[in-house]
Length: 415
Image (cartoon, rainbow, N blue to C red):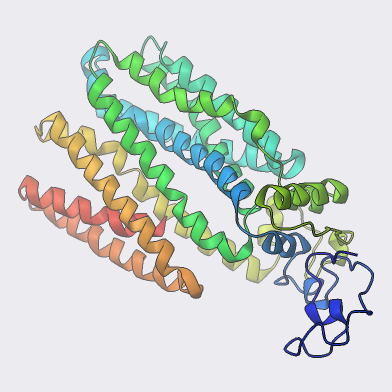
């Protein structure tokens, strides 16, 4: 009978040494199908490979993963377009509504807080109800808020509607990250997750191009409708969004998880191997398990608390830097820089971001990610200091553009 994914070669063939000829004298000793993931190392400590990861690795990387990357990449794209697109028409709305930089500061702060709420709400929903329903719910909320923003009658209605949009977009991104990561073989996970950031850059590029074409005082509503179209198109593909086999397995839906893994095999044409997962361990039986649940688990031990605080600080710094983009148009307007020059500068910075993401994807292989992250943060700190010096010294626009452009590369590597 066909062997089950994940069983060691020497056990499958009855041979002692896997380096020997596996078929020599083993033709009559083919064992019964073995259950995936029953090796001791898979049932061991917290760093052990999960049975689902072993099955994903055996199923390989193919058409199924490319399809999921396309869908989740569009979620990255949507988050980028909806979260940052409005910044490109601040100057236009200043002229129509008489808004000020302080107004947009309030809107940006409110949007950011709504993104936090969205991440918590939809992230919790993804753990309780599934990645797929949380993904679709966040997508629908983003589409509604984005499309309704085009009907805003003034600053306060725009603030409310963009807050709704960001609540959806804030939940969409983390759920999409989980959905994609849990469909990727562990050996491809790091590089693929880095490459996916290109979709985020392309979203900003599209927003800039649309602003150049539709950002006038008479067409900014069309601009907001155009920003919402990718979200609506992605929502129309809801039937193609799969559920995570990892989520199914961890919630005790073993049969559904096995079927999800078989589907990946069929689409990837990785062979007719059977998949049989062991029952998941109860939380109390897992190594290092505690009574804490939900967010409290992130701080349930000293080691976890340190790791949570460290990653929280890294994300805080990366997110703070990402908001620079939202003020480039206002800064250019204040300095008297022509609008088309500001928009061209933004496109150039985003192309630099593509180079940064590709470089990070290549260099992160082989476990070098932590070293690259430290180096990128040091470079970002130096670039931030350079921008501060240039602004304080009131240097020329060329020096300002160069310093801000140099700031983008290390922060994009961090992302």
